[in-house]
Amino acid sequence: MMYNLSEKAITEKYEDLLFTKVMALYAAEESEKILSEIKDEEPADLKKIEKIYSKTERRENLSVFWKVSKKLITVAAMVVFVAVVSLSSVVVASAEAREAVAEAIYHLMIKEYDRYTEVSIGNSTGFIDPEIYDWEGAYAPTYIPEGFSISDTQFTNNDKSVMYSHGEDYFYISQTNNLSYARIDTEGSEHVEKIIIGNSEAFLVYENEIVSLVWICGETYLSIDGKISIDEAIKIAEGIKPLGKTEEPTEEYKFVDPELYDWEGAYGLTFVPDAYKFKEKKSAGTKNVIIYESNNGHFTFSQSNGNPIARVDTEDAENVETIIINESEALLVEKDGFVIITWNNQNTFFSLRGTLPADTLIFMAQGIKPIGKTETEESAEEYEFVDPENYNFEGAYAPTYIPEGYIFDEKQELTTRAIITYSNGNSYFTITQSNKTASLHMDTEDADSISEVMINNSQGILVEKDGFSSLAWNVDENFFWVRGEIESAELTKVAEGIRPIN
Image (tube, rainbow, N blue to C red):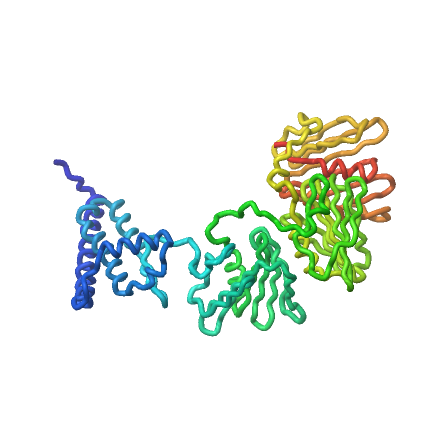
């Protein structure tokens, strides 16, 4: 037999023996303590412990788990620990094995709670207190700040609220499926902003050390309110997920007046305030307008297929901002007691206009859903590109529409951008794509018209000056600029037809 007598081998062997010895001494000491504490109690039923542990792993029958004494679970933990250490003389024969045993012992955790003690191997990434969120369609937290525990619950048919406390700090997680308008008092607030939670726009308000955070997931209205930091409130919100499912199911929506939406590719309203009743429907070509009114006001919902150019008068408006409607950028304008929201989704343009508060109109816009087809089916559309052979660079987008009479003229490929020119002999236009978002300086001095428009799901700027039209917008990390001596309506149609080629 040959022995490795190198310094490294002898050192590793010494560490192995030392580790085994330390573990054996520690196991003997801890086992003696436990045995002295439970000598007058009934012996632990290992089969019962195994059964309980198995149920805990599967998140089943937690009520049975709670009834087991803390002492019994502690014994179970030590049984596992002693078993690992007892095997150390066999398995701890190399540095790799020693590390494996050390890691196994390190991950043996005993977590104590007011109601029960949980023994687990490794870290749990599941829901917290899932047994509390036992109603249909429940959303539950996957993160709760350390030290917080449930102190109260308030459940009604439509509204559910769970309170967590830690000393003087507290917060509520609330959920409702009642699609009524929710108001947030922002007057005098120290901090008010709109943020994104998951794929939803959320409203965050901070006032007098109290945080309020509200957002919508599908047909569920969620909120977090309490005396905690803004960062913790956001972290809790981002960890709230639908219980018992890993992804949103295909939902069936309850539309308001579904018989009105009889055109191809129609989207419908799933929420209308109770006081508002249908008044009139107007259709012209690809545009459909539905009007609702009440004793105190009115609103219109319009949908146009083909992404027509959207002009919104923002001059002297009290508020102009960009918001998110179902993952699409939208333009919100408040002016003279009116609220206007416009946005695009795929090849469809939407507009909501009315005398309702902005938050109510936003809530309605979030509830607009396709009738008779899913968004997945829309996104699977196949496009017929014009001159695809000219768009052979990485990450290229190509046009699906070019005005009649215009043909490819030339192509310039630079380091970060490509410029394609089309002409008809008398006039021309160019399509520019850059793989880096850009800050564009457009000449707007003495312009005939400056408009904010929606190009598919992105906001763009359209400038018309001296018979020349220029339109620029960003999509993800790509910057586009279409400009030339053609009508702005045709230029917009070219822009809206540009799609990723791969």
